[in-house]
Length: 97
Figure 1 (cartoon, rainbow, N blue to C red):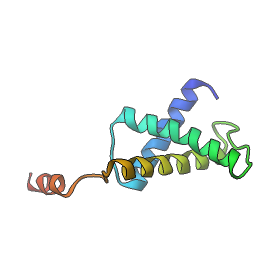
Figure 2 (figure 1 turned 45 degrees about the horizontal axis):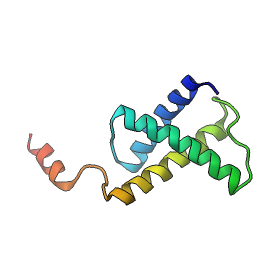
Figure 3 (figure 1 turned 90 degrees about the vertical axis):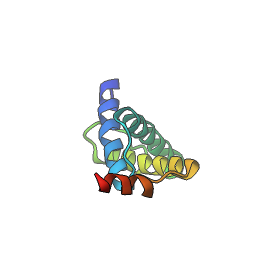
C-alpha cells in the first residue's frame, strides 16, 4: 500500500477506534493512532498468530487487524495516561451551556 492509502486507512481506523473506546481526539492524533495501530495489529498478527494479513487496502483482514490494533493501542495509551474520554467535570460544564 502507498503512503496515501496508509493515511486514509489510519484516519478511518482511528475514527472507529475513538468511537469504540469513547475517547475523542483531534484529527492528527486520531490518524496517528490509526496508522500506528494498524502497524501494531499487523505485527501482532504476524508474530503471535503467524498470519500474513496486510495484503491490500480493500482486504477485510487488513481493516479488522488495523481496527483491533488501534483499539489496543488506544486502550494502552488511556491506561498509561489515566485519561478516559471527557472527564466528569467537563461533562457537567458542557451540560450547563
